[in-house]
Length: 418
Ligand SMILES: [Zn+2]
Image (tube, rainbow, N blue to C red; front, top):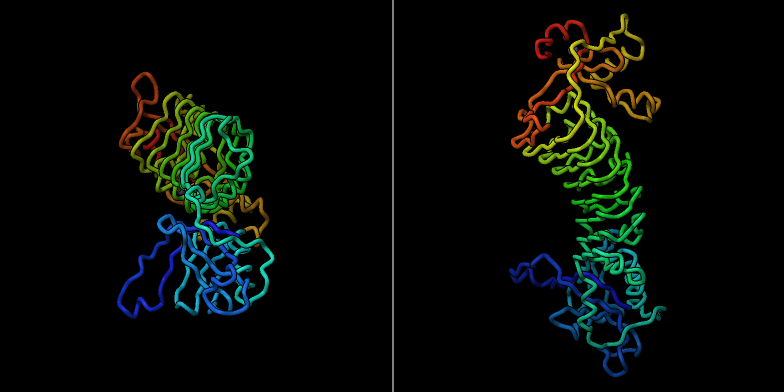
């Protein structure tokens, strides 16, 4: 029985001697081995199991007695692939990390049995040196660029941090890929993906996701509300068929780099200004008609909106003021302007949606159905250092929508409109 993981063996005497631990593990193969008769580390009934820790430098491995020798098993983070075996003799902590959590659980229960001196009911390994090829399971990067190289029978090494599988004709995301919990970069560009599984959101370390040149029509709400909110920095959705992104997309707060080139976007999610970390935004060759009011809050290094079908700013504003305000409008404004917390557990879901999609007036107050809408043009240089020309005429201006909660606001701020 073998476990591939990273191991650090810490002596509990070291801190006393003033020696510091390095604090990181080395790649290792940890085996539960049968001790041949006469070679036991300690005298006792023969045939009980021991732990063998082998590394690239020490392929023969170091052997540790297990029977009645475990002081404690630390398993709080076993779901993250981490555990520590504290031995009585020698006084060491064997810290296991980056293991497949399923295999680790099985391994630890076998270790427990060996400690009690019970027969372990899985086949034990022999005390032979570990082959170099076994360490290949620690591969962190794998690049596949053709269908014939895509592994069908063999599993992906669980330790992968960077996986590229392009030009493989994939029509859905392989479930085996979604089990690679250490992934930081996932490149599935140039395939035929139509939908993304929600479980991509379970890849807690995922920083870069490239889905360029697929058949995607959306980027789901549940993905926007997954752990990707905390990890995702770079997202490439270029060359797909995306018509709209959900408003929750703007909760992907860590995004720095967003490529939406060559899609069918009519508008940006209107809360785009919440993406405060965004530095590179490209949405060339879409069908954008105008920019949402919050676009002004972005602070970019690079912006490319070339080849969109921006409309001419309308001279006449759209007036939708309600007099008097409806009960809904009045309540929504009160809730938002006073920052009263709300959620689907307190009020109906559709009301939450109304609240989530409220518009912000230039004065900072909120409105839903009662507003004046005006279009103005903005120079894109006001939000980005480098701006790619919007059209072939050399322009860097684009229409942007503004909302006004009252006639007073409209009159006071109308000089910002053309
Ligand atoms: Zn106002």
